[in-house]
Length: 464
Figure 1 (cartoon, rainbow, N blue to C red):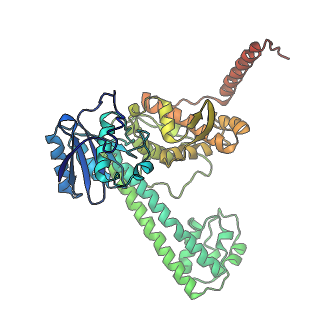
Figure 2: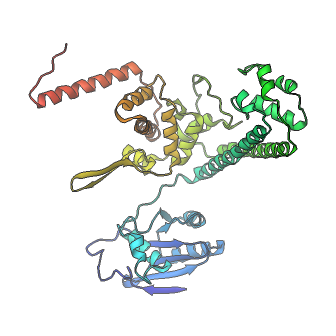
Figure 3: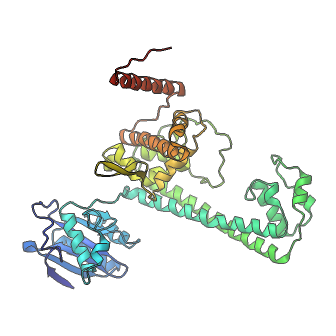
């Protein structure tokens, strides 16, 4: 189905684009749905040609051919669930420059809610025409998407995080079944999913009921002795709760096997990514106390692969573990040209305050509440250096006295993001600054500020 219509339906009288010049003369707008995709291309004499397509693969290929026939160079589409991904990848494969926008009305300052209030004005045809018009005048900002070869790794990493989330409730089910039998294993052990806890639970499922025999399975590093653990393992042994414990353990083992398979696939995908940089030997990092994580990927050389892909060692930054560095690299990518400055980068991460000013008065100055995995990784890294003897730890403690713990963590994450941005953009390794030198630099800054402030009011500072 094709139709010709005037651009800006319902808004022709207002002429909102009068006096503006088009930035993309050969621009296309697409409204992506679950079953139908509406595509709008520019026609002759200010007209717009709209055509409806299906959502099958043959329809996506037909869209690419139709756009090529009309000389289209760039395509803007609205992100609707995950329906945009096949169309985006197909058009990108054909050489079109694709833009993904979150809302078709936000960039132009037109609210979609107010647009829907007018009966008969809101439709898929109008949406794709409006997207095409805004994109042709350069009023749409494209959402960020990392390099194509890192998208597969990012997808696997997100899937791995979901597997860990799905496995966690079954640990709680095991604890609940034990507590209902008055088996106080969670009080005797710090973590029932650890080595000692899993050994005892598997012995219980296998049929062992003697608490003293179960207590002998404790690891020598457990703080509780065998007698106290034997008391904790004395219970009622109800049949229904033992059945639930057995099934919860089987679910836990299933997800653990799926995690191992996912780690193997991540390692294979890492090896398939093209080597951007020559691999060099990585220096040994100091082992942190109690830094073991049972959810860490096994048989995956994360540091080695990230060094090869990024060109720098992100784990050298204080507080950034291999897992956090992997999240940051795969969510952000390695091409920092998409972020003109470090301010743009921190704003995209959600670590920069957004000022709302009206009449010269600041109404709000808070960080935006966005779901950004890379931003969350920086916040976690900032939390891990609160008591550390490093520049970031000293900065956090200094900001905590002024802003409080919550805002101090965001400010520290902001500082760490600026460091990582410079590392990825200029391909320079992280050189840690000593805490004493950092404190001296801060003291010099404060003295310079105080001298300037005193001179402004006609005073002079005199050292005691």
